[in-house]
Image 1 (cartoon, helix red, strand yellow):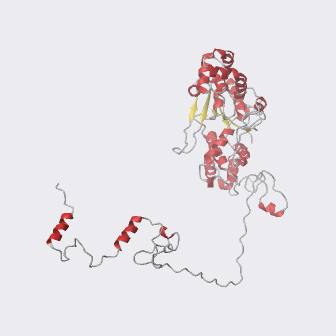
Image 2: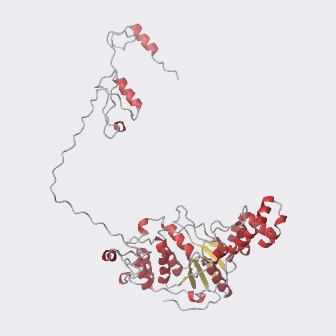
Image 3: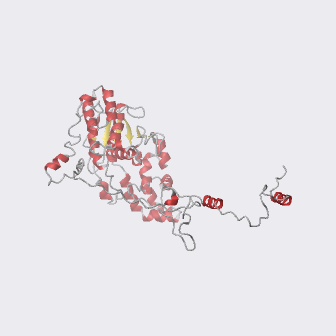
Length: 470
């Protein structure tokens, strides 16, 4: 049910939400969370819709920056084919396609706006920024205050005494890439562009925009553009007096790309007189139909926000059935696998989502099977007392049996493993197991207690290290 129209009056607060940018922000924030919250039971991606509904419920319930709106507009881009494509065919040509998991969520965003009792605003040949600029001018003329919910720098040209921007918080608090909420006013515009809002389009025309593929003038950035506009006043004056610039590269770049700068200004300048199809008076904010909203949230299987909405509006959520059109196997997403089984030769409609049919388990075989003989285990290698057989899990047994004996060695005495954890340990074991010298071999120094003479003992003591005096 659409709200009843109410004309704007001085003191009203109008919230204009850039829905298109908000959808992408919700998606990229959702992929950083647990994936089990981003899919419905039929594997339909719903993570961006969940965060979109959470923020929309906040706007409807509490507002933003301490302001509760009287009028709320959620504005989307209808398509990429705007009038700017006619001026410059390469406009936004560098943008990639949306992620595959986001594409099926686009129609659900419109359904979410309707579930909150609002009207999704979109219009052919114009971007969402143009509609926001038109609504902003209408609200300011009526004496209302405007809050633009977006972080798009292209909308900073609209900021004025009664117009501000609000950039909601992004990411988890304290997490990687988190950003607190901020209010953007005149001071923030001058800090970012170096010029007041009415000169923003001149700076953008010179600096260009790689995001939207706006050409601009090569070699000139935002700081240089702000310096030139501050010195010459506006873009046309700068281009007409470009020959006076002292820097040769900058002068040649401006003279050779003057037409590109003029086209760039047309691309970045927002249209403020669009013949909007939805009047601003129809965007009045009223309390939503709680049962209709809960039916949508239950169809999306959003448990937490369903409970919050039910508690906020005093409705028993268990008494509300999910919206059959949006629930799994509903009309919006086509028939499920049962319909495919009924018509095996029929093709699935394009753009609809289906639950993947489960594969049937093969029944166990009833044929008698003879027991398989156990494989013969190879005999362990013959290790001598000088070597320790490595365990089956040690790195020294990676290559299985020891290396074959080389010429001159006994076949029963294998060589040490090719790789050992520590060769020092291996050499120590070799030293401990070395053969003793025969008793008849001469020994200049014998251990004490083996019949040594005093001279031998003195010689042994003389060779022993003497502790140094402290």
